[in-house]
Image 1: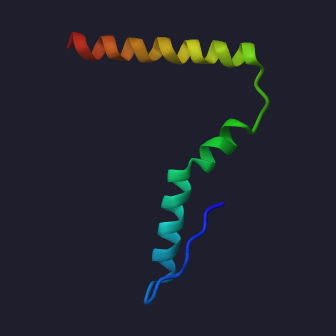
Image 2 (image 1 turned 60 degrees about the vertical axis):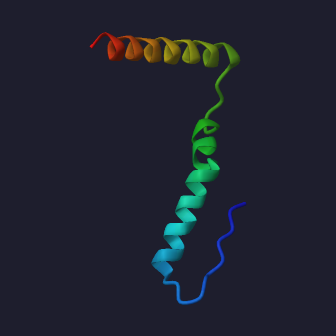
Amino acid sequence: MTIVVLRNNESQDQLLKRFRKKVVKSGVLSTVRRKRWFVSKSEQRRMDEKKATRRLKRRQVKYTD
């Protein structure tokens, strides 16, 4: 759980900004988005393979230029 304590002379906007940064850094939102729907292991493996091929293609294009 992410906790942010109000500092002396800190505005609500600054407090909210610090809270958002902590949430992003902790990875809570990405975990929630990833676990929003059930994905079988075989489907996850296929998605990981596709992601790896895209990553390799990007690297090859980057180094050939």
